[in-house]
Length: 197
Image (cartoon, rainbow, N blue to C red):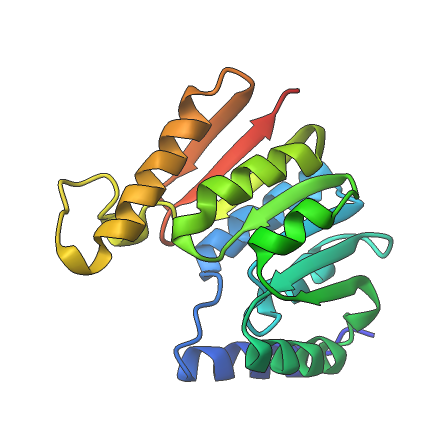
């Protein structure tokens, strides 16, 4: 049974502790996509504290299963508690470990893949996402514009690697003929890629 109060507490705590969670305007768009696509299975790369996976469970119908991968053990512990308190734990499978190692072992077919993890690995996640997604499915990636740096001439050392990797990701999703992509300037940038195998 969905617990709205616990859901709000999880969100508030994440924001207070500066844990990166999906921004409200990005979430509104994703909610719209989920209603339209009506997915049966979602793969999320980057669980954090379970907030976005809980959102996906809330915005989809009862038979939708969410598989989610997280590297940080402390965050996994928190996510397990959070999804239980929110009342959506029966629909969320949390896998602990490095997504780069876990993804090749998966063989489920997904309707939607959501990428929100290490920026330097987005291209690897894309490759695995394309392999695991059903024909016509969607790959969503959050933070692709990365504070506006990706589309500017930003070249400061601190974020240079992340920016370079995100530029490569955008090049791949916009130039691959089997992918149809739109990039929205909401939140920190959301890319929506439909895969035509």
